[in-house]
Image (tube, rainbow, N blue to C red; front, side, top):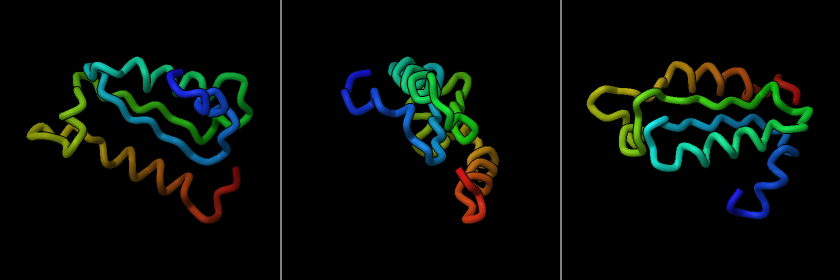
Length: 88
């Protein structure tokens, strides 16, 4: 973790989705941040690491010509966990 505050990420109760391309040069950071967030946490049900196979950073800015951003998965996550009736 490159910032001390991230050591407390496993206390986050809110929904968190980390979306990262597996070919991005900082993929390890997103993966490690997710692992730290769920380690020894009782708030893991609403956490997700969404890995986009073959994607780099630039592929995820706007989906690029291949439209690699899985908007359907984003919508499903947000509808489930950002619903006013959802309880942490």
